[in-house]
Length: 221
Image 1: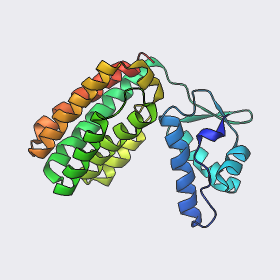
Image 2: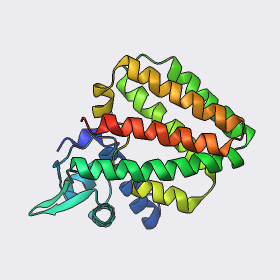
Image 3: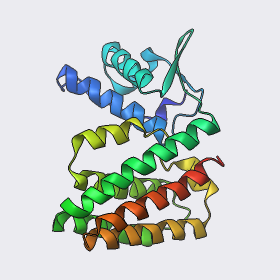
């Protein structure tokens, strides 16, 4: 297990509940972005040392990751769960519906600041080098997260998080060409146009189509 891929030092100054949530977030992010690979072993003591915390928040995080379907128990610790093509296809359908709903709500609730933030993220993506894998992942996630935040529905955010098993990650970047990146940016432009126009139906439909297209790429990983 290459723990260097997990951002270090959660720190002991946080309250216990916050510390546990931070460990969970770090590990979940590493899994859903593909930094931690399917079937990769996860040893609690090693993770605790890497994040500079006790084993308690790591153990609690593993239980939560297991409940979320992201890790499975092994004889010695845990491992990242490997998903079948059927799992991936079903998850894409659910995520399409949920993020479509979020886009529709965001079209009704987004503030001018929200739209400005989305426009800035989109402009940054348009200027990216297609070979800059980390920037592509970061800006794509930022764009989607900003829309989800603009929907202003914490319950919906939780539901989307629960299906966040197959985010746009390194595997997808490597499979997708510069042309497919351009198509993704074109999708984002159409979604942003609908949000700016406060057209909820168009925003939802365009987000659904965008995630469905990305889902087809994921199934080829």
